[in-house]
Image 1 (cartoon, helix red, strand yellow):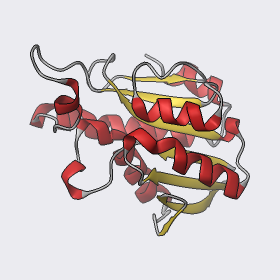
Image 2 (cartoon, one colour; image 1 turned 45 degrees about the vertical axis):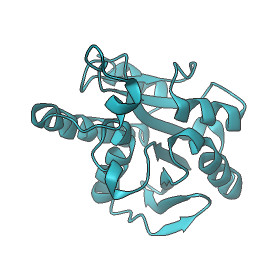
Image 3 (tube, rainbow, N blue to C red; image 1 turned 30 degrees about the horizontal axis):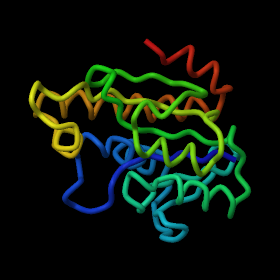
Amino acid sequence: MKLIVGLGNPGKQYDKTRHNIGFDVIDVLSDRLNIPLNQAKLKGVFGTGYVNGEKVFLLKPLTYMNLSGESIRAVMDYFEINDDELVVIYDDLDLPVGRIRLRQKGSAGGHNGIKSTIAHLGTQEFNRIRVGIDRPPSGMKVPDYVLGRFTKEEQAIMDETAKKCADACEEWFKKPFLQVMNDFNQ
C-alpha cells in the first residue's frame, strides 16, 4: 500500500495559497491516476485506487494545518498502513519557489503540520517531499505570507512543480523512495 498526503487548509479561502501546495499535488495525482477524492471521514477527504496492482490512498487532512497528524494517524491506523508506506507533501520556507527536496526523515523545521505529524506518528522517520515557497519579503509576517497567494509568475512555476511532485510520487510506485530521492533532488 501507499499513502500520499498533501498538507493544506480546507476551505475556498485557502485555495492556491502557499500553504496549500500539498493539496495542489494531491489534486494533480487524483486527476492523473483517476482516483477521485470521494470519501470524507477520518478527519480528511481521500480516495483510493490501484496503481500497478498496489492500493494507493490520496489524502487531504481537513483538520487545518496545525492538526494534520490527527487525520494521517487515523487513516494509517484504520487501513493498517506502515510508516514506510507514507509520503507527506508540504510547503517549505527554506527552499526557493518551485524547488523540491525529498527526504526520508528529519525534524519539523518549524512547520506546524509536520510537527503534528511527527507527534502523532511518534517518529521523524517518514518520507516527505518539501516544496519551496521561499521566505516572505522583509517586514511581512510568516503567517500572512504562507496564507497568501503566489504571484502570477510564481503560480506558473508552482503549477509545474506540482506536476514534478506528482511525477516523484508515481516513480515511488516503481522504485524505493531512496532511489526516487536520488533521481529528483536537485
